[in-house]
Image 1 (cartoon, rainbow, N blue to C red):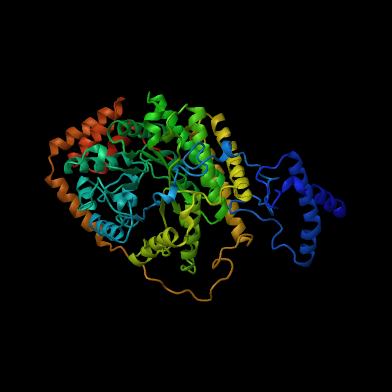
Image 2: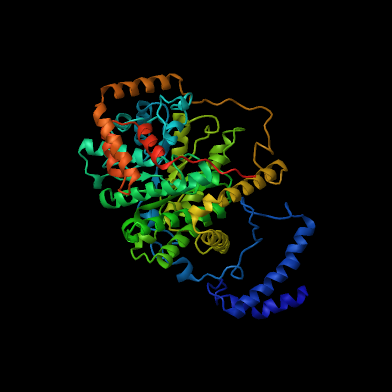
Length: 583
């Protein structure tokens, strides 16, 4: 059999080679048949002989998400329909990038996530990072702020300033961005449930400084759906939360046109244990839900879609992550054009921030994390991200030190300026393996979205617990693979060190809570009590009705109402939420 296949290969060789011996870019049907014959001969001949001498390292090779990987990809596995599936950079379907020149024109934004302690401390870190070459700010808030509680709440005890910066009032926002030009530096704020309040604080700050609203730029995460799926930091239930998000989309489309009103976040979905395909599917499905909510409000899709952005995780499997970014752009462009009739090119472009995978970092041998982050960052760049945060080596222990965050930033700068990968656009485009993997991830993600559509959309799917169950199941499978040593984690279940070295850590002083509470008490004592009552009453009236919540919440911010005072009104009118029990 092998000899017959080899003879067929020789006779048909001309059908899948050019005259100069190079591989043809477009094989016809006969050429593909000849290639399949050649592959069969190769597998039963040279491959089988090699495997008799040296057995394969594993019975099955898979991506980090469990997708079985081909031994070698060829045109027999992936026929490239160039115009339909790839296109040129900056052109539909944007598989090869959302900008015509990509990094040859402008490098991705190096946006390091920062926030800890008091607003004064984080302001110092912001200025340090800008001085070190960071090109955009990204704000991490502490857990009370993420949940809509003030620093003096009993619920906040022991958490103030610990995992991010504490922000209770407009006064804290004034301190946080002291000396930072809001019209020249874009700011990302990672907050969801109370996002409307923090955005109101930021807009109120710009108003106080006399900066026109159409001059400030940035992003507020504001992805309520992924909170119910993965991260669980909410203020009200899913449907009221969707109303709040849509109010923000509507308001910013009119008054803050440079602001990305939702950063549709797959990051936390992946960190909760999702596979790459699940992250892709549930993130895109969340985005579709926001688009449908905006259209239902009466907005033209082209008036708000250009300001929807995305936020993806970058995990360990190098090619899987690259393929995920490419599939995401293609899927979003097709959905926006074919399902919603978007006409503007900007409405079709999936623009994304990315962050290396926090869940992949290990407490054991923490300096290994520098290598993990470098590879993940390289995958994000080769995948075509517009903005990137690189995690620091010490983040499994604490918030990063200045030294570790500098190494993380330098990692991006070395990739940008020393590796050469930014000199050409989509250098892996056309790789049979990458294109095959892009198709595989897209097909799996589309199957998830089909099921979500059948349930009535993402809000209904979340209420039924569907994405939550899928993620929990994949997280369980992955953990079992680690415990059974089917999956190697260097330094954890293999190549373990006999002794672990201590590394320097950033410690947040417990006096932060006392300082923050003292400052909050001063704000409360100095503000106009009648103005506060009137402002909160206006928020309550808007929440009970159907008028847009942004104007009264901005007015409440200017009256120095606290975050919790505003969120308590929303909870009072719209109700609270608890996860449904799952067995």
